[in-house]
Image (tube, rainbow over all chains, first blue to last red; front, side, top):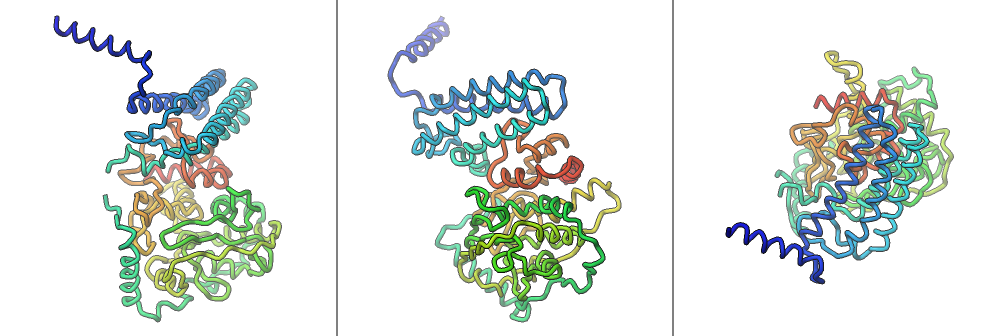
Length: 157
Length: 304
């Protein structure tokens, strides 16, 4: 009985949240951003697995590339609010150089569109080249705006 | 864990201490250049140079990465961007065949001695930012081919930027002491018990590829630790490049295919991309290598 009451209270608290104008909880912002990035990385890894393993799933590549492009469009809003403290590798420079961040994000979306085109054409060489430029575009944003691996919050201290 | 953590204040004192110990131990006699091997015992004319192979050797050696100012659209091989270290900033020089500003005036013998012994045509020491500690393992024919190729590159009359180093590291004579400690020029010797591919990989990784220069921890005077390729750690004396050998290797779970693919495209198996300097190493170095050579590198690294 008490359990059900507490569950109802918790649920109503959750439901009440989206309507409020309160600042989002920093940890939740980080959690969302990380899952969004992981989703992009997951599609990248899936494409890589198809190419590396010469799987007969070449037609999936275009789909993955489009999903990366769609996810890329969610990135600016996900990083709108500055949350750079906590268990995150986001560099504070994202918010001091937001224009650059958004521009690099746009380039990444274009590179994924290019990969989708190459995949539809079906030439493996072109696909590999498009993957390379998409990878480079990920890196060009990670380089200034993501903490290097050795400084990551994931590293044991 | 073993990373050396020091405040900005104490670092120079530690350097000076390390340097004076080294200097006292080895004495001035060792400071004189010419300790390394010379071209005297090698017949450089025994090989007929192959320019096309030389162009490939350039990629094996990753030369473009440091000798071209990639980020600022610098001219091919006409001198690189700065390499920042605790000892100051090193600038890889112009290696186009311009006779004044490049290496056009260097003979093949000069070039061989530079690559393997780290000694300039004038008999001075090169700073070990030029990785002769690895290039000493270069096969003679590869050096001959590389020189032949470099002679065909468009000469560029661009002065090399001088290094900006902190005293006492700015003194080339100290490099003599350093070399007596950390540079043992010996050619690559294949391990007969291993496959041809493994040996090719070992040669590429430890010789031309000079992977250990970044992927190995360095001490206070820039000498490499015994644990080659086991990562540079977070110490300010090290590059921060991750371990690619040993128990903390970041590529321990990677398949041969994963490694080859990574060295071609810079994409990791988990969908991430390479970071830092490795992006340039892949784009201007490893991605130009044959599948066979990349498999050799992967075979060797996976055995470590």
